[in-house]
Length: 380
Image (cartoon, one colour):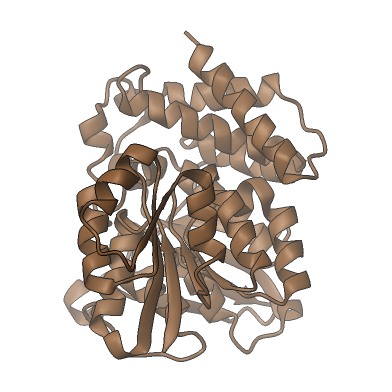
């Protein structure tokens, strides 16, 4: 029985992780659950899975949850509660499914506690990849990718020599606006941006998919996960989301991982690795699908992806600025304060305003992240 903590248990990845656990209950024990403000769902999860620790974002939310839970479950809150859920509940594997850079500190805490990390919080490696990967190596801790694309790369590399890799290719669905021209994006609404054609995801990642910022974050994440130079990381548009990513080797062989667009498949692989188990997700039927389509990536059509490559190559503080600016701009778009295309304008402005510089501590990352967010909030 594997002991698991889930950070972000009420979000899309968190609820699907619990669905995987529910499918094979004799194999797992839930040690801790952490969420933001969805008290009712967290309480429901806690009553079903009986963790020893739950944590919510605020004291008020924690007090509400405590009134509905038995005495055997400790109810915590805030950053310290999140860190306790990550590092203090005795989990062997911590699934980090938090949205945004707030997942960095708890991921570091989990690694310092010796837990493997099922990483769905790509912003952790984007902003702090140089710190997190070095710490994981020093602690002998595995970072197991949960994103479908990085799980695919991880699986394609099994048993292969990294020296034989020619390039890796991340596939991209293209998001809600993949068939629109840039001229047609001027007045798109929040509701239209959230209508992803393939995946059921949270609001932030769905908007990121439409801007292709999400794929940019994955490019930077791939650089750290696989020690791969940016020149060997490619992106290919694949509307069906059946091939989740692929690896090309020096002999021109290409190994790809295929599956239906169901996040429970990569989540379960992270939970069971190096084993494979029967999945609650449906099987892939290629005959029923009939055809798969591919298009080259256009960096002019998707400037957020272009800026992510540029930030990754610049290194230092640039990926932190890219990530923070994108998060803050998406928040403003979701609140109706800026237009869709102003997300990319905001990122460009912040990258110009904050030139790359070395950032070598978590505290420096957090300080820069906060500064960028304040600047984005102040933009008119």
